[in-house]
Length: 387
Ligand SMILES: [Zn+2]
Ligand SMILES: [Zn+2]
Image (cartoon, rainbow, N blue to C red; front, side, top):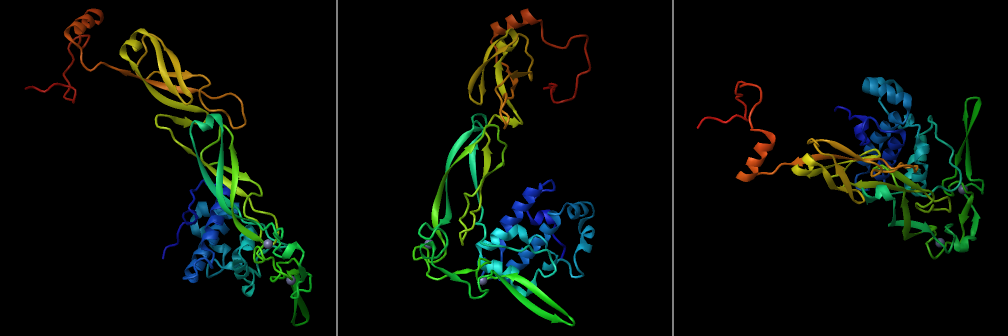
Protein backbone atom coordinates (compact mmCIF):
# COMPACT_ATOMS: atom_id res chain seq x y z
CA UNK A 1 0.00 0.00 0.00
CA UNK A 2 1.38 3.39 -0.92
CA UNK A 3 2.21 5.59 2.03
CA UNK A 4 0.20 8.72 2.49
CA UNK A 5 1.85 12.11 2.26
CA UNK A 6 2.76 13.45 5.72
CA UNK A 7 1.16 16.82 5.06
CA UNK A 8 -2.02 15.11 3.91
CA UNK A 9 -2.09 12.96 7.03
CA UNK A 10 -2.07 16.07 9.22
CA UNK A 11 -4.40 18.00 6.89
CA UNK A 12 -1.83 20.69 6.17
CA UNK A 13 -0.51 22.44 3.14
CA UNK A 14 3.19 22.53 2.38
CA UNK A 15 3.62 26.06 3.67
CA UNK A 16 2.28 25.27 7.15
CA UNK A 17 4.12 27.02 9.98
CA UNK A 18 5.64 25.15 12.91
CA UNK A 19 2.77 26.29 15.09
CA UNK A 20 0.22 25.00 12.57
CA UNK A 21 1.96 21.64 12.40
CA UNK A 22 1.84 21.38 16.16
CA UNK A 23 -1.79 22.40 16.49
CA UNK A 24 -2.90 20.04 13.71
CA UNK A 25 -1.11 17.16 15.40
CA UNK A 26 -2.54 17.95 18.81
CA UNK A 27 -6.09 18.14 17.47
CA UNK A 28 -5.72 14.79 15.72
CA UNK A 29 -3.96 13.21 18.69
CA UNK A 30 -6.90 14.13 20.85
CA UNK A 31 -9.24 12.62 18.29
CA UNK A 32 -7.39 9.37 17.75
CA UNK A 33 -5.82 8.47 21.01
CA UNK A 34 -6.45 4.81 21.60
CA UNK A 35 -9.14 4.94 24.24
CA UNK A 36 -11.52 7.10 22.23
CA UNK A 37 -12.39 4.35 19.81
CA UNK A 38 -13.15 1.74 22.41
CA UNK A 39 -14.80 -0.30 19.67
CA UNK A 40 -11.70 -0.44 17.54
CA UNK A 41 -8.65 0.50 19.59
CA UNK A 42 -6.34 -1.25 17.12
CA UNK A 43 -7.41 0.99 14.25
CA UNK A 44 -7.18 4.07 16.46
CA UNK A 45 -3.69 3.08 17.53
CA UNK A 46 -2.64 2.63 13.90
CA UNK A 47 -4.03 6.02 13.00
CA UNK A 48 -2.40 7.57 16.03
CA UNK A 49 0.91 6.05 15.03
CA UNK A 50 0.49 7.37 11.50
CA UNK A 51 -0.11 10.96 12.60
CA UNK A 52 2.75 10.70 15.09
CA UNK A 53 5.13 9.57 12.34
CA UNK A 54 4.05 12.51 10.19
CA UNK A 55 4.55 14.83 13.14
CA UNK A 56 7.95 13.38 13.98
CA UNK A 57 9.14 14.42 10.52
CA UNK A 58 7.29 17.70 10.00
CA UNK A 59 8.01 19.09 13.48
CA UNK A 60 11.75 18.84 12.92
CA UNK A 61 13.09 21.45 10.47
CA UNK A 62 15.93 19.22 9.24
CA UNK A 63 13.79 16.14 8.71
CA UNK A 64 11.06 18.24 7.17
CA UNK A 65 13.46 19.75 4.68
CA UNK A 66 14.78 16.34 3.66
CA UNK A 67 11.23 15.07 3.28
CA UNK A 68 10.27 18.11 1.19
CA UNK A 69 13.20 17.51 -1.11
CA UNK A 70 13.30 13.73 -1.38
CA UNK A 71 10.02 12.42 -0.04
CA UNK A 72 10.00 9.29 2.14
CA UNK A 73 13.44 8.31 0.85
CA UNK A 74 14.84 11.39 2.57
CA UNK A 75 13.71 10.32 6.04
CA UNK A 76 13.71 6.49 5.88
CA UNK A 77 17.10 6.28 7.53
CA UNK A 78 15.68 8.05 10.61
CA UNK A 79 13.61 5.01 11.47
CA UNK A 80 14.48 1.36 11.94
CA UNK A 81 14.20 -1.40 9.35
CA UNK A 82 10.46 -1.81 10.05
CA UNK A 83 9.87 1.88 9.58
CA UNK A 84 8.58 4.22 12.25
CA UNK A 85 8.09 2.77 15.74
CA UNK A 86 7.29 4.49 19.00
CA UNK A 87 10.97 4.37 19.85
CA UNK A 88 11.46 6.95 17.10
CA UNK A 89 8.97 9.38 18.57
CA UNK A 90 10.78 12.22 20.30
CA UNK A 91 7.91 14.65 20.84
CA UNK A 92 5.97 13.09 23.65
CA UNK A 93 6.56 16.28 25.61
CA UNK A 94 4.23 18.09 23.21
CA UNK A 95 1.42 15.87 24.42
CA UNK A 96 1.99 16.24 28.13
CA UNK A 97 -1.15 18.18 28.82
CA UNK A 98 -3.25 15.78 26.75
CA UNK A 99 -1.72 12.90 28.64
CA UNK A 100 -2.49 14.61 31.89
CA UNK A 101 -6.08 15.08 30.93
CA UNK A 102 -6.53 11.45 30.34
CA UNK A 103 -5.11 8.90 32.74
CA UNK A 104 -5.72 5.98 30.37
CA UNK A 105 -3.90 7.65 27.54
CA UNK A 106 -1.08 8.62 29.79
CA UNK A 107 -0.59 5.11 31.03
CA UNK A 108 -0.84 3.70 27.57
CA UNK A 109 1.85 6.07 26.51
CA UNK A 110 4.35 5.93 29.30
CA UNK A 111 3.63 2.71 31.12
CA UNK A 112 3.49 -0.08 28.62
CA UNK A 113 6.78 -1.79 28.29
CA UNK A 114 9.00 1.21 28.03
CA UNK A 115 7.69 2.39 24.71
CA UNK A 116 9.94 5.35 25.04
CA UNK A 117 12.87 3.60 26.57
CA UNK A 118 15.27 4.84 23.93
CA UNK A 119 13.58 8.10 23.19
CA UNK A 120 13.84 11.50 24.70
CA UNK A 121 10.90 11.20 27.04
CA UNK A 122 10.84 14.15 29.33
CA UNK A 123 10.52 13.73 33.01
CA UNK A 124 7.02 14.83 33.93
CA UNK A 125 6.70 16.45 37.32
CA UNK A 126 3.74 17.33 39.46
CA UNK A 127 0.18 17.82 38.39
CA UNK A 128 -0.60 18.29 34.72
CA UNK A 129 -1.89 21.27 32.87
CA UNK A 130 -5.55 21.29 31.93
CA UNK A 131 -6.43 20.85 28.29
CA UNK A 132 -6.65 23.62 25.73
CA UNK A 133 -9.99 24.58 24.25
CA UNK A 134 -10.31 25.65 20.65
CA UNK A 135 -13.29 27.57 19.38
CA UNK A 136 -14.01 29.69 16.33
CA UNK A 137 -15.82 33.01 16.19
CA UNK A 138 -17.08 34.61 13.02
CA UNK A 139 -17.01 38.35 12.51
CA UNK A 140 -18.22 40.37 9.54
CA UNK A 141 -15.64 42.05 7.34
CA UNK A 142 -16.67 45.46 8.69
CA UNK A 143 -15.55 44.41 12.15
CA UNK A 144 -11.99 44.25 10.84
CA UNK A 145 -12.17 48.06 10.59
CA UNK A 146 -13.75 48.71 13.96
CA UNK A 147 -12.60 45.75 16.00
CA UNK A 148 -15.20 43.74 17.83
CA UNK A 149 -15.98 42.18 21.11
CA UNK A 150 -17.90 38.95 21.30
CA UNK A 151 -19.29 37.00 24.19
CA UNK A 152 -18.66 33.31 23.73
CA UNK A 153 -20.00 30.39 25.68
CA UNK A 154 -18.11 27.12 25.67
CA UNK A 155 -18.65 24.00 27.70
CA UNK A 156 -15.54 23.36 29.75
CA UNK A 157 -14.42 21.85 32.98
CA UNK A 158 -13.67 24.13 35.85
CA UNK A 159 -11.87 23.47 39.07
CA UNK A 160 -14.24 22.20 41.75
CA UNK A 161 -14.70 25.11 44.18
CA UNK A 162 -15.41 22.84 47.17
CA UNK A 163 -11.96 21.23 47.10
CA UNK A 164 -10.12 23.95 45.14
CA UNK A 165 -9.57 21.47 42.35
CA UNK A 166 -7.65 18.97 44.43
CA UNK A 167 -10.30 16.23 44.63
CA UNK A 168 -9.72 15.84 48.38
CA UNK A 169 -12.44 16.89 50.81
CA UNK A 170 -12.03 20.60 51.70
CA UNK A 171 -8.80 20.56 49.76
CA UNK A 172 -6.97 19.18 52.79
CA UNK A 173 -7.77 15.49 53.23
CA UNK A 174 -4.62 13.96 51.79
CA UNK A 175 -2.30 11.18 52.82
CA UNK A 176 1.11 10.04 51.65
CA UNK A 177 1.05 8.00 48.45
CA UNK A 178 1.64 4.38 49.57
CA UNK A 179 2.99 3.41 46.16
CA UNK A 180 6.01 5.70 46.27
CA UNK A 181 6.08 6.59 49.96
CA UNK A 182 5.48 10.24 49.15
CA UNK A 183 8.50 10.65 46.89
CA UNK A 184 6.52 10.89 43.66
CA UNK A 185 9.04 8.61 41.95
CA UNK A 186 9.62 4.91 41.68
CA UNK A 187 13.09 3.41 41.58
CA UNK A 188 13.74 0.08 40.03
CA UNK A 189 17.11 -1.55 40.04
CA UNK A 190 18.22 -4.32 37.74
CA UNK A 191 21.45 -6.19 37.67
CA UNK A 192 23.03 -6.39 34.28
CA UNK A 193 26.16 -8.41 34.61
CA UNK A 194 28.46 -6.32 36.76
CA UNK A 195 26.52 -3.13 36.42
CA UNK A 196 23.43 -2.17 38.24
CA UNK A 197 20.87 -0.22 36.30
CA UNK A 198 18.64 2.02 38.35
CA UNK A 199 15.72 3.50 36.53
CA UNK A 200 13.69 6.24 38.08
CA UNK A 201 10.18 6.73 36.81
CA UNK A 202 7.42 8.95 37.93
CA UNK A 203 4.87 7.36 40.22
CA UNK A 204 1.74 6.88 38.14
CA UNK A 205 -0.64 6.36 41.00
CA UNK A 206 -0.03 9.88 42.37
CA UNK A 207 1.10 11.52 39.12
CA UNK A 208 4.36 12.39 40.80
CA UNK A 209 2.75 14.48 43.51
CA UNK A 210 3.61 12.07 46.31
CA UNK A 211 0.20 12.34 47.92
CA UNK A 212 -3.10 10.57 47.66
CA UNK A 213 -6.63 11.59 48.50
CA UNK A 214 -7.66 10.29 51.93
CA UNK A 215 -11.26 11.54 51.96
CA UNK A 216 -12.69 12.21 48.49
CA UNK A 217 -14.44 15.51 47.82
CA UNK A 218 -18.17 14.73 47.71
CA UNK A 219 -18.92 17.63 45.35
CA UNK A 220 -16.81 16.37 42.43
CA UNK A 221 -16.32 12.70 43.27
CA UNK A 222 -12.62 13.30 43.82
CA UNK A 223 -12.03 14.36 40.22
CA UNK A 224 -11.25 17.95 41.20
CA UNK A 225 -13.20 19.25 38.23
CA UNK A 226 -16.79 19.98 37.28
CA UNK A 227 -18.53 20.47 33.96
CA UNK A 228 -19.57 24.04 33.51
CA UNK A 229 -20.04 26.69 30.87
CA UNK A 230 -17.30 29.19 30.30
CA UNK A 231 -18.55 32.64 29.39
CA UNK A 232 -15.86 34.94 28.23
CA UNK A 233 -15.76 38.16 26.30
CA UNK A 234 -13.30 38.01 23.42
CA UNK A 235 -11.86 41.28 22.23
CA UNK A 236 -10.94 41.19 18.56
CA UNK A 237 -8.51 43.92 17.60
CA UNK A 238 -9.02 45.95 14.41
CA UNK A 239 -6.96 44.89 11.42
CA UNK A 240 -7.05 41.18 12.24
CA UNK A 241 -6.44 38.60 9.49
CA UNK A 242 -8.75 35.72 8.70
CA UNK A 243 -7.81 32.58 10.63
CA UNK A 244 -5.82 34.34 13.35
CA UNK A 245 -5.68 32.43 16.61
CA UNK A 246 -6.16 34.48 19.75
CA UNK A 247 -4.82 32.86 22.86
CA UNK A 248 -6.50 33.49 26.19
CA UNK A 249 -4.07 32.13 28.73
CA UNK A 250 -5.37 29.86 31.50
CA UNK A 251 -8.96 30.09 30.25
CA UNK A 252 -9.03 26.49 29.04
CA UNK A 253 -9.92 23.32 30.92
CA UNK A 254 -9.08 23.13 34.60
CA UNK A 255 -6.43 20.60 35.46
CA UNK A 256 -7.49 17.47 37.30
CA UNK A 257 -5.12 17.56 40.25
CA UNK A 258 -5.04 21.33 40.73
CA UNK A 259 -2.34 22.03 38.14
CA UNK A 260 -2.48 25.10 35.90
CA UNK A 261 -5.45 25.41 33.56
CA UNK A 262 -5.07 25.06 29.82
CA UNK A 263 -5.46 27.89 27.36
CA UNK A 264 -8.41 28.98 25.31
CA UNK A 265 -7.66 29.46 21.63
CA UNK A 266 -10.14 31.49 19.64
CA UNK A 267 -9.84 31.34 15.89
CA UNK A 268 -11.20 34.46 14.22
CA UNK A 269 -12.97 33.74 10.95
CA UNK A 270 -13.88 36.70 8.82
CA UNK A 271 -17.12 36.49 6.90
CA UNK A 272 -16.80 37.98 3.46
CA UNK A 273 -19.20 40.70 2.39
CA UNK A 274 -20.35 40.33 -1.23
CA UNK A 275 -18.90 43.06 -3.43
CA UNK A 276 -15.84 43.68 -1.24
CA UNK A 277 -12.45 42.04 -1.54
CA UNK A 278 -9.68 42.48 1.01
CA UNK A 279 -6.01 42.63 0.16
CA UNK A 280 -3.97 43.49 3.24
CA UNK A 281 -5.01 46.96 4.30
CA UNK A 282 -6.73 47.67 1.00
CA UNK A 283 -10.32 46.94 0.08
CA UNK A 284 -11.47 46.60 -3.52
CA UNK A 285 -14.94 47.03 -4.97
CA UNK A 286 -16.68 48.00 -8.18
CA UNK A 287 -19.24 50.73 -8.74
CA UNK A 288 -21.49 51.58 -11.63
CA UNK A 289 -21.38 55.07 -13.04
CA UNK A 290 -24.02 56.40 -15.45
CA UNK A 291 -22.70 57.33 -18.90
CA UNK A 292 -23.54 60.99 -18.43
CA UNK A 293 -21.49 61.21 -15.21
CA UNK A 294 -18.56 59.45 -16.88
CA UNK A 295 -18.72 61.87 -19.80
CA UNK A 296 -19.37 65.14 -17.99
CA UNK A 297 -18.15 64.40 -14.47
CA UNK A 298 -20.15 64.54 -11.24
CA UNK A 299 -20.50 63.06 -7.79
CA UNK A 300 -21.01 59.32 -7.39
CA UNK A 301 -22.18 57.55 -4.26
CA UNK A 302 -19.79 54.70 -3.39
CA UNK A 303 -20.68 51.95 -0.92
CA UNK A 304 -17.76 51.58 1.48
CA UNK A 305 -17.30 49.25 4.46
CA UNK A 306 -18.72 51.78 6.89
CA UNK A 307 -21.50 53.58 5.04
CA UNK A 308 -21.44 55.56 1.79
CA UNK A 309 -18.90 58.04 0.49
CA UNK A 310 -19.07 60.54 -2.35
CA UNK A 311 -16.54 60.25 -5.16
CA UNK A 312 -16.00 63.21 -7.50
CA UNK A 313 -15.85 61.53 -10.90
CA UNK A 314 -13.89 63.68 -13.37
CA UNK A 315 -15.24 64.39 -16.85
CA UNK A 316 -14.08 61.87 -19.46
CA UNK A 317 -13.72 58.96 -17.04
CA UNK A 318 -13.03 55.72 -18.94
CA UNK A 319 -14.63 52.35 -18.19
CA UNK A 320 -12.44 50.37 -15.78
CA UNK A 321 -10.87 53.51 -14.29
CA UNK A 322 -9.76 53.06 -10.67
CA UNK A 323 -10.07 55.60 -7.90
CA UNK A 324 -8.63 55.53 -4.44
CA UNK A 325 -10.72 56.55 -1.45
CA UNK A 326 -8.00 57.40 1.04
CA UNK A 327 -8.34 55.99 4.52
CA UNK A 328 -11.46 53.94 3.77
CA UNK A 329 -9.69 50.57 3.99
CA UNK A 330 -8.48 48.49 6.94
CA UNK A 331 -6.25 49.56 9.82
CA UNK A 332 -2.99 47.86 10.67
CA UNK A 333 -3.20 45.30 13.46
CA UNK A 334 -0.88 47.40 15.60
CA UNK A 335 -2.72 50.63 14.94
CA UNK A 336 -1.97 53.48 12.60
CA UNK A 337 -3.51 54.79 9.40
CA UNK A 338 -6.19 52.89 7.60
CA UNK A 339 -5.47 51.65 4.08
CA UNK A 340 -7.43 52.78 1.05
CA UNK A 341 -10.58 51.68 -0.70
CA UNK A 342 -9.94 51.14 -4.40
CA UNK A 343 -13.00 51.33 -6.55
CA UNK A 344 -13.17 50.29 -10.20
CA UNK A 345 -15.82 52.09 -12.22
CA UNK A 346 -18.10 50.31 -14.66
CA UNK A 347 -19.76 52.71 -17.07
CA UNK A 348 -23.45 51.95 -17.61
CA UNK A 349 -24.44 52.53 -21.22
CA UNK A 350 -28.09 53.19 -21.99
CA UNK A 351 -29.63 50.11 -23.65
CA UNK A 352 -31.88 51.95 -26.11
CA UNK A 353 -32.04 55.51 -27.40
CA UNK A 354 -34.96 57.22 -29.10
CA UNK A 355 -34.60 58.96 -32.47
CA UNK A 356 -34.18 62.39 -30.90
CA UNK A 357 -31.34 61.20 -28.64
CA UNK A 358 -29.66 59.42 -31.56
CA UNK A 359 -29.80 62.63 -33.60
CA UNK A 360 -28.29 64.69 -30.84
CA UNK A 361 -25.50 62.18 -30.30
CA UNK A 362 -24.61 62.02 -34.00
CA UNK A 363 -24.52 65.75 -34.10
CA UNK A 364 -22.25 65.96 -31.08
CA UNK A 365 -19.94 62.99 -31.65
CA UNK A 366 -20.05 62.45 -35.41
CA UNK A 367 -21.56 59.53 -37.34
CA UNK A 368 -20.94 55.93 -36.18
CA UNK A 369 -18.71 53.54 -38.11
CA UNK A 370 -15.00 53.00 -38.65
CA UNK A 371 -12.73 55.94 -39.10
CA UNK A 372 -9.88 55.99 -41.65
CA UNK A 373 -11.00 54.14 -44.82
CA UNK A 374 -12.75 50.78 -45.13
CA UNK A 375 -10.99 47.91 -43.35
CA UNK A 376 -11.72 44.26 -44.23
CA UNK A 377 -14.87 43.05 -42.53
CA UNK A 378 -14.06 40.56 -39.79
CA UNK A 379 -15.67 37.12 -39.75
CA UNK A 380 -15.87 37.29 -35.99
CA UNK A 381 -18.89 37.32 -33.89
CA UNK A 382 -19.30 41.06 -34.07
CA UNK A 383 -19.94 41.18 -37.82
CA UNK A 384 -23.48 41.06 -39.13
CA UNK A 385 -24.18 38.00 -41.19
CA UNK A 386 -26.06 38.34 -44.46
CA UNK A 387 -29.79 37.72 -44.29
ZN1 LIG B 1 -14.21 18.77 44.63
ZN1 LIG C 1 3.08 7.98 44.39
